[in-house]
Image (tube, rainbow, N blue to C red; front, side, top):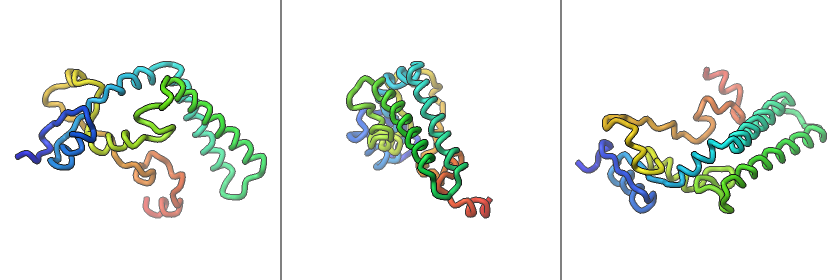
Length: 173
């Protein structure tokens, strides 16, 4: 039958054909998105990876500092230090945006968060590639296992308990 997840539908227009193939027929969908190649190449550059490492380090430090400060009121000095670190994160993120070389940024991000296109790509496409020839690296019988599609931090254990109720977590584990 037409409605089967055993059909792989490959398209280059997310909203013109891939959404209908997924919603209407339940087909496995693959998007051809040429912009992926540019971003993969960019993310391999040392400038981009260095900026990403610094951002991750700063954000990790910000989280750790707040844990160490506890749940009480922060001093003016504490707030000033946190503000300075947040500004540093913003500057490094701007550095990454500048590396894109496009005033509009990435098709996959709106500033620093996933764009509507990225969310839709994740929702309606089981896989995506820069061009169809990317499939040549796989056997015709290859089975793809998409990453976890849960988006909320309470659904993903590795995300960390930043805004969870600690007592609830301790009681259920």
